[in-house]
Amino acid sequence: MRAGAAGGDTGLGMSDWDVIVVGAGAAGLMCAATAGQRGRQVLVLDHARKPGNKIRMSGGGKCNFTNYTIEPANYLSRNPHFCKSALSRFTQWDFLALVDKHRIPFHERDHGQLFCDRSSKDILDMLLVECEQAGVTIRVKTVIEHIAAAPGGGFRLTTPDGVIGAAALVIATGGLSIPTMGATPFGYRVAEQFGLPVWPPSAGLVPFTLKPEDKARLETLAGIAVDSRVWNPRASFRENLLFTHRGLSGPAILQLSNYWEPGEAIHIDLLPDLDLREDLIRAQQVQPNGKLKSYLVGLLPKRLVSALMPAALAEKRLQYLSHARFEEVAALLQDWQLMPNGTEGYRTAEVTRGGVDCDSVSSKTFEAAKVPGLYFIGEVLDVTGWLGGYNFQWAWASGWCAGQYV
Figure (cartoon, rainbow, N blue to C red):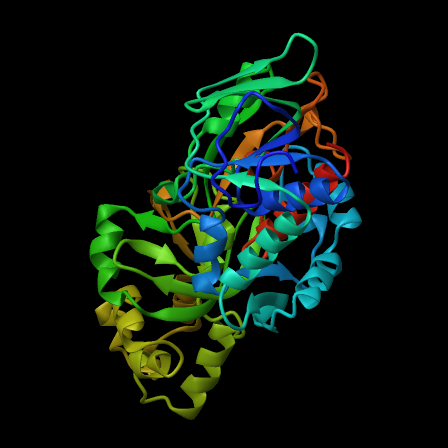
């Protein structure tokens, strides 16, 4: 190995490397370890104080590292076919084999989501051990001031510690989500510098904020979670919806946010297992003197019923309500149409939509079509996964595939 062990403090000099990976996150570490195992001399650079910050904090500290069910349909991209090759060549089962090799205990939650039993640090340590065993050098707290194509091929990177070169350069710098963890547009700037198009980034897997009038009406519901179906013309999800002080969150909302465009209403069914109109007709026959509110409170939290149902209507006895009225009630609760004010943005977003145009990158090698030796992997690309371990699986798959070729 040319310049120290993984995580070492060896200074950077003029010596060239086979591969430089920019970004010590999920995709970058996977790529570095894979390339190192092929005998490549690999240097990983990151501006953060420690490698793998987002791995460490992910999944509430338990790291939802993959999912039992991974399909291309779980991903968004302007090129929906791009992810297919990598996902088929390095699958969730391949990553689980690595987890088993390192004896990391894990468990399954809803919808096939896999989490560490102990801590997300288990996954990070696994990657760092793989890098160390492959002779990879990792250098943190390193700012890249300039990147240039070398006259004879390869790239030269200028840092405060000197200029370093490599035949292959891998950009694994992620997106813009959670800027407090060090997210920057660095990867997009590199792509633009070398003539690759970048689709405008935006926050994904992110809570919605509400318009002032809706916020005033609903903020007392903060903390309430309801099993719901939420949808728009392009997608539908059935999971928990969570009311917050700022708006709406929970898995169902985060999933739908990937498919939402500003100025668009979302639809919410708070009772997805019921035909509410028919249930109300039956209740009217059995308990005609019962109040509408009393019936609904048996199905939904009292505060939620009070916030959504007009008081005068809620106090009426079932015997005095027509079937047409029941239809209105069902529409209020099972096709509640709400116009978000926006999202909470990158501050709380789990991923970034958009990124480097996949049509400019090989789906097999992840090399830029018109820039030999330049690779893009992970979240910096225009590939966005669902909530539930899909974005980590994309990081593992794209990093492993690029690591076969750099």
